[in-house]
Image: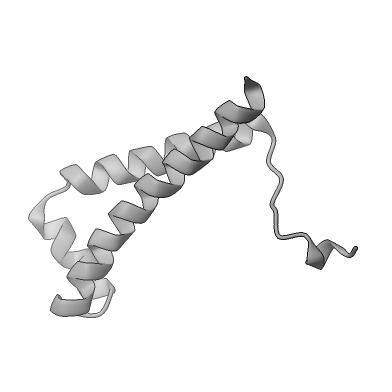
Length: 78
C-alpha cells in the first residue's frame, strides 16, 4: 500500500488537542463576533445570499470537526 492509498492523517495527541482547541476558539469567536465581522465574511464568501450560508456553514463545520476530533482523541486515550 502506498502512502496515497491511506486516507488518514496521523497527529500526535498533543497536536490533535491543540487543533480541537483552535477549532473551538474560532467557532466561539465567530458565534460572538459583531455584525460587521459577519458582513465582512459574507462579502469574502461571495455576497449576501451565498455568503451568509457559507458563514453559517463555516461556524457549523468548525464545531462539528472540533467535536469529532475531540471524540476520537478521547477514544484513543481511554
